[in-house]
Length: 470
Ligand code: NAD
Image (cartoon, rainbow, N blue to C red; front, side, top):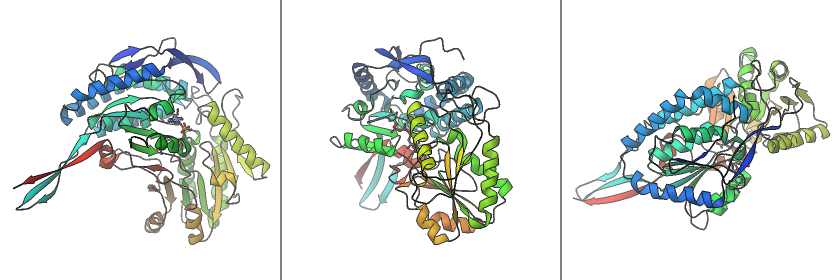
């Protein structure tokens, strides 16, 4: 991929160079590969002012017009998917096939949200009156996605926000700005000027989330930062959706076919080098099958090549950024110091990039940090269970409640267990599937509000009840 080009921000339908630049690091080498615009606070003000000005016209368009433009955007992304995947590979480190998967999923979000229409709700239709609940856009939305799936996480914000009639300022995570800047460039002529703005830069988070020019913050990131975002919005009671951290448990019942489920469980835990909010981060295995499943997973970990995503046989890429690399490394070192048994996977040859081998932790104590904390990297504790009540108590002991999975042949039993899990999503015999049709959000400290589904779309709207006399 030739990155010998300048990426620009998109503000008011036009290119905007940064006031300065910021380095872009290739995580597979740890070296600077190019740079991206660094917006100044004045430029952020400008982007928000343009979005505000565009809102007055955009909100008067019909939902059909907006849906049609979102669909048009999908076709443009589709036509440029190869280029976008190459940029994503370089800045993210994930192998090309995984980058393509993310972009295809993002395009699907564009198409699916373009087909969603909130209906007017009639809550009373009596001899005295008719009561109609209408939905209106909120205004200017600030979208702040995390870096692990920068494009799909952004699509989950861009599409409903625009379909609902809001304008938007997207600020990608500073370590994954390029692909989204390119998407801004590609969509410049699709939406009216000022409707879809993309700015980039380090150190802008709290400036954005406390900015009085926004009517809604749609934020995806860690629980700790989410609390700061919430505090920043308190003075104006700004609307917000917070999609936050998770320490997702998966349960494996003794009736599974180990050979069949082991690769699926491995994928659900380690795809994207385990940097997925809904990845399996604690694996509870029934005692009857603990050893054979542990050994099967270890074999897969050893056989899954970790390396530079641009090499064709790479399965697992590096950790995306240095801050996360240090955080996961520290957790691993702590586990080593505690004397836990670590079963290590494929050892990457490259020592320069942000690589940490896929690592299974063999039945650690339940209060060890590898179990209680969200690693957000390739460390998976395997925990043996034989009593279902104890199991559920352990599964629900986390402050998080994002997602979970159950692997079982007896799906009725799995549904019974799923109902006892304190999480927003539970998959049975599958994992990581988040369609636009279905609300996704966390229980407990995993978030507030939902994305996706009609509820996610309505999260970008305000309701108005009109009482019409008869
Ligand atoms: P993070 O909270 O450190 O950063 C996320 C984003 O917030 C980045 O764009 C960052 O620049 C920005 N930011 C940083 N400080 C800010 C502030 N004070 N105000 C506003 N924005 C600020 O999170 P991270 O480490 O980049 O991402 C990993 C976390 O995100 C994990 O906990 C993971 O589970 C979570 N996540 C959740 C979901 C979900 O849908 N629930 C999806 C992906 C990731």
